[in-house]
Image (cartoon, rainbow, N blue to C red; front, side, top):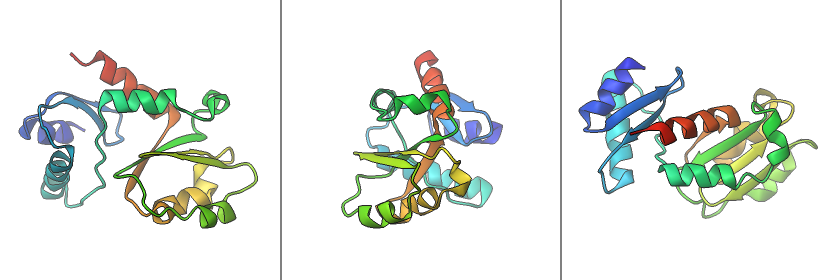
Length: 160
């Protein structure tokens, strides 16, 4: 993660903090266009590490809103079963019919703008819905479990 911090700092980002070995980072930026900044971060990672990940940037207020808007508060007690899928953009033609066909009886999902919540009580690794969600929503995304989302919010609120 030290290399990620250095790469982000080299882009002019300040107060960079990372969360475990997850590729998640919290930072301050004066960049006006988040899409341009996401492209710059993706390019820096490609240059230094040889792969190009999906980069989804959220302001702290958007992360807080996603937490506050959780439609499955009862699932928070088992944070590894609740996943927030942060989308690169709002889906224009999500295939809800296909999603409903592959979800199990215990799974639930809810799309709210650029966040798709997934409660998968039997585990994300067993979830066909979780595996197909990006394709069926039709937009790039990155998924984080509830524990990680809460930890990132704590980092963001402690940032100077």
